[in-house]
Amino acid sequence: MKRLAVAGGWAPALAVLVGLAALVRAERRAVALDLATERDLHGQAYVGSAACRRCHEEHYRTWHRTFHRTMPQEVSARNPGAVLGDFSGATYRHAGVDVRMDRDPSGAFRMTFTAADAPPVVTIVWRAIGSRRYQQYLTRIGDAEYRLPVAYQVEEKRGDGACIGCHRELTAASARARHSHHTAVTCVDCHMPRVVFGVLDVHRSHRIEVPDPARAAAYGRPDACTGCHADETPAWAAAAVHRWWGGSQPSQGSEVDGPLGKLLSGDPIERAVAADALGRTRAPAAPPALAIRTGLLLEAMATDDYPAIRHLAARALGRLVPSMPALAAYDPNDDRAAARRAAVERVRASLPSPSVTAPDPARVRLLRAAATAVAIDIGE
Picture 1 (spheres, helix red, strand yellow):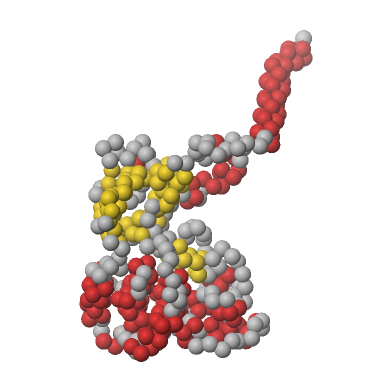
Picture 2 (picture 1 turned 120 degrees about the vertical axis):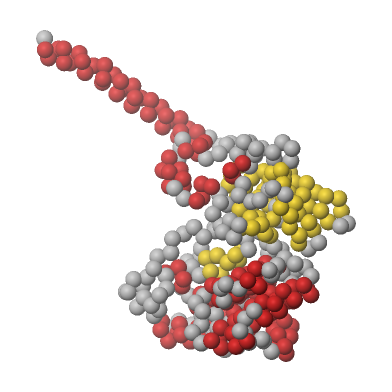
C-alpha cells in the first residue's frame, strides 16, 4: 500500500513534466516553422527587440549587455529620455542655413531649417541613433527614414554637424610588445588603426590586417604607422617595417605623403584623418616638432574649407596644448573666413612664441595646390 501511495503521488508530477516537454517541443516546432516561412516584410511596422528575443535568446542577451541596445531608439513624447540633444530652442548655423531644435505643441522633437532664399523646412525627429559618444537623428518621409544633418556630441555636450568606439582595447603584454617592437601599444593600434572617418571623428578600421605602409601609400590610404608617428612619412614607416619583418620594399616619398603634408594637401577625408592623427597620437618629444604640428593645425583651423576638418584640427590642438581659454572661443562652423582668421590669431597670441612654428607660406601654397579639389558631404 505504501508503494502504491508513493507511485500515486509521482503520477501527477510525471504528467506535468510530460506536458511541459510537449509544450517545449511544440514551441520549438512553431519557431522552426516560423523561421522557415518566407515573408515580404516591406511596409511592416517596426517591432522592436522584444520580437527578436523569442527566437534568439542568446543573441538578445549578449546584445543587451552592450551599448548597441541603445543605438536605435524610437523618439516620441512617451519616450523623451531617448533624446540626449538640446531641443529647448538651441540654434546652429552652417553654410547659410539656420537650424533650430525645439519641440512642437504636442511634445514631438523637431528641427527647423531656414535659409535666406527658401521657406523654412520643419522635420520631426522619428528615431535617435547612438547614446554614448554621438547621437544622430532620423526623420521619416513616406516609408523611408533619412538622417538629419545635425547631430549631438554626447562627450562634448554640444550639437554639431554629424561603429562608434565601443570595443575594449587590450594592452600588449611584455611578449605581442617584442613582436611589435614597441613598448606601449595595443593590438588594435597596429591591426585596427584609426583611419576611418565618420560622424565627425576618426574611428578604428574593422578590417583587421597586417600594417603595410608601402602598400597603403600605393593606394593612397592612411597607414597605422604614420597615424601614430605623425611627424614621419610612409617611406620612413615602410623602411622600419621592412627592417623588422621583411615584406614590401621601402618606397620613395616625401613629407607631403605623411600626416604633416596631408593635413593641407590631401582630399577632405585625408585631411580629416591627418588632423586627428596630429592631436591624438603621442606628442613628439622634441619641442620643435610639437611647434610644427601646432603651426599646421592653426593653419587648417583658419583656412580649410570644411568645418569638420576645422573642428578636428581645433580638437587636436587642444589635446597637444591643453588649457587654452582662447581656443574655447574659436567656432569651426563660422563661415566667415576673416572672423575665423581673427579667432585663430587670438589662439596663436595666447601661446608662447617658441611653441608655434608657422608653416612657410610658399610651402602652404604648394601643398594646397596639390590637394584634391572635390566637393563632398563628410558630415558637417
